[in-house]
Image (tube, rainbow, N blue to C red; front, side, top):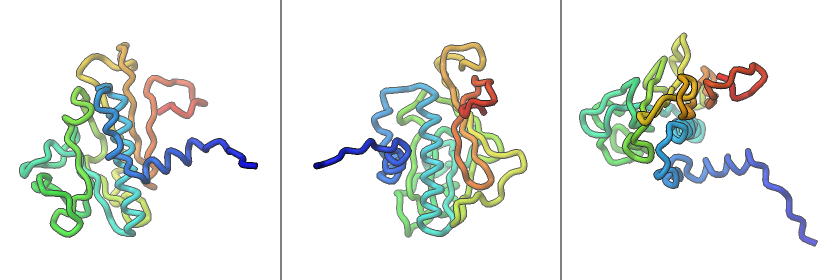
Length: 189
C-alpha cells in the first residue's frame, strides 16, 4: 500500500530556493508591499551565499543604484547584483560566468516592488567566502530595512507591515519583524 507522508515545509522551501529562488519570485510582481521586497532581499542574499558554498569561492551580493554602466554600490539601492567580482560600473553587462564582472544574477528595483525603499546598515556589498561566511564583516553588523512609499510602517504607527533582514558574521540570513516586542517570539528583531 502506498503511504503518503506530509511534506516538511522547511525542506520544501529549501527545494524552492534550489530551483531558482530569486528567479521564481515573478509571481510577486503584482504585490507591491515592503514585505515582498524584504523576502526578495533575504532570498537573494541567501542565493549569493548558496552560490559561494556551491562554487567554494567568493560571491558578492551588492545593492546598487542602477543596473547600467554607471552603477555603484549604494546603501539605499533598490537594485541588486550577485557576481563573482565587483560589479561597480558594469552592472549593465549580460550575466556571464566568464566575462567581467562575472554577473550571476541581477534585478532592478523597478521589478516586482517599485514602491519599496531600501536602507542598508553596515555595508551595501557583502562578500561570502567559500564556506558561506562574510569577508570583512562590519563591527556594527549588516541589516537591510525595506519600507514602502505608499505609507508608514506598523512600527511607525502605520498600516504597512515592514520587515528587516539581518545578516550575521557567520553568513546566517534572518528576516525579522520590528513590531514584535515579545523576547520569546522568534520573529523579534
